[in-house]
Length: 310
Length: 60
Image 1 (cartoon, each protein chain N blue to C red):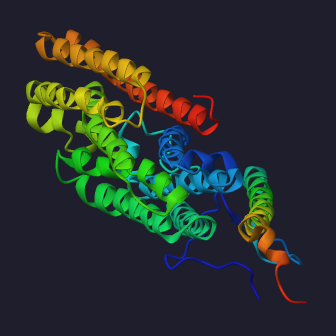
Image 2: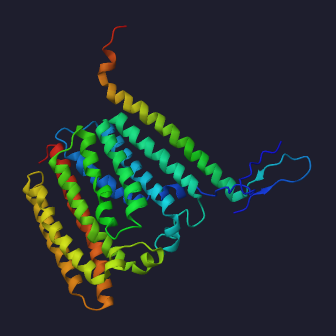
């Protein structure tokens, strides 16, 4: 008897050459690191922190859950990833990994991360993580991304949820402070991704993804970016105004807010294509720095507070 | 990517893996083994932490 199982079309099965590094690439490690960081900020908002091992497992589960979403995103979007320069070297379009393996990997990790979080912390946190994965994969990737230029506006909720999941993992509850952190990331997301979409406008055109610059034009996109930053800058001050961050955070948020509005305003008033691209590059880079800066100050402050050093 | 059948007489039919495929499979198997072992240790540690000292408070 032959050991060989033929496929329905009479061909031999494709045998992947993928190594563990290819699977790690599926997890989008850079996105994972930002998710861990924002979830840590949420976790540290808890009045009584969990046991260090439980906190570690909570962050690990949230990171793996985010990674699983990334793998499922790469499975579903392999066709458009192949058309875009930025994503064409990902494991599936590069031919190193078959889509079915990516799907299985994503599903297994999703289930594992949700149940590990539930087992280690509580089932509210696990349900929130499951919702985050569902929202990113089903609502954003499968539905909104190819359908509407508001894809990133609504889909941004998935990326904004980790602080709420982190706080829920530590306390079993949701509070105003974690919702404020959610709101900051939620409002930060569109200007950040629209700046990227301006820089990669040809890529998105080729892939047929309806990003705002492709659908509504650069003028409208720059106006929207400016309006969003005008909301983001005061919102960034909320942790200080609501009393769960210090005046040091307030100063950082104020300086960062003024900078990001200034960059958006310059971008809006730029006249030629080269200037707009340069400004979009500055907006993309500074937006990362801005969000990272706010959460870094928050994390340091909360850690010092828990250690009773401030 | 190529996968061909061993067709020499006296040999079992089967997919012959290229060295690259063999290397990939071996690395994946090791990674799964390490992953499962770490998961066992992690769940053991979580159980110990969650039970805490309460584990000693039972009738023998």
